[in-house]
Image (cartoon, rainbow, N blue to C red; front, side, top):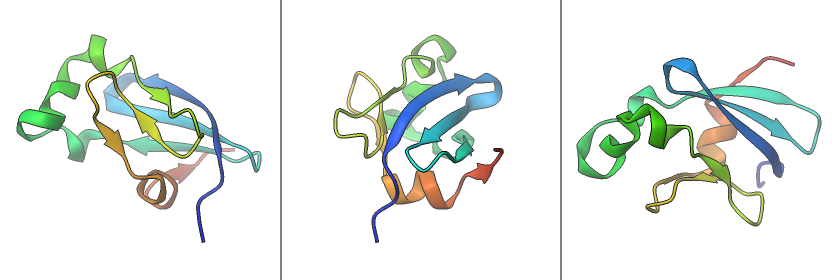
Length: 82
């Protein structure tokens, strides 16, 4: 089963992402485990991290240089906050 569509993403402090889903759920994803290596390490730049946006199909979150996080990881590894 596919995770619900993401309607909005808001980058927060400490490399977290607040995600608002079409189901009405609001979840917070901790991206800190993804900040290593050359590819995802670029996300350590907080200015760049804050450019996170929802993919056109609402399935995930991505950044300008192509980094993305799989929709199922975003949904399953996030804490529900509302």
